[in-house]
Image (cartoon, rainbow, N blue to C red; front, side, top):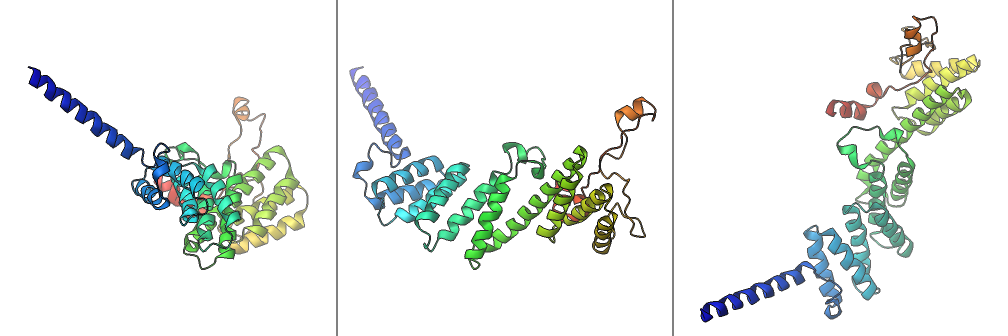
Length: 308
């Protein structure tokens, strides 16, 4: 019986020692035993955390590495990997801050283009909410401040590093951002129509036409200009917008076969209000103008609609 108790005690102690050893491996590079680590030890442990996608441990060790070896051999590379780890952990604000810090401290670093690229990815990721992957949402109706930031970041990347390996992907993302920004301007113009702010609506349409050429929203921008100028009594300006619209987008829904613009049509909310139905048409409240032809001219929007 005593022998059995001794064996049980030995097994228990062995198990405790094993768990303790595993725990120390799981907390790889923790502050408790980091004092004995060399810079290379730190970096190798960080690489293991990154390869295993253990982002929280990698971030802690990367920050610890920089604090203990700020001018070491791996300091600059560790700063770049911190940007990446924070991005992968969805801590976009921290990743953007780390990227901006790296760009400020190392403007001539051979991999500074990577900092610009990941910063742009973080700003793009901030556009969509958590539920976007589950519930279809219109990002052009959200706050597009991050979209503007991403557009500026990726534009700077392409202007400063046109031959960067990240440039091809940045160009594709810029196209999507350009379309998103242009569509947002049209949404604002539609809102101005609903509030009777016709001059503001015309200015938004003109801004899209002048600044987002080749964007699918240009057709709606011309239609906004035509409608707003017509309602303002500036028919010559309205006719000019209609001519450009008919020449470039002859199949636009508000144009007839002769290229004339139907100013009374309503692309969105075409039916009268509930008040009109309640009074059998005696009181008719006409819907304000609104334009949205993404399903005609925007291939990406068509594909998204099919997927949804």
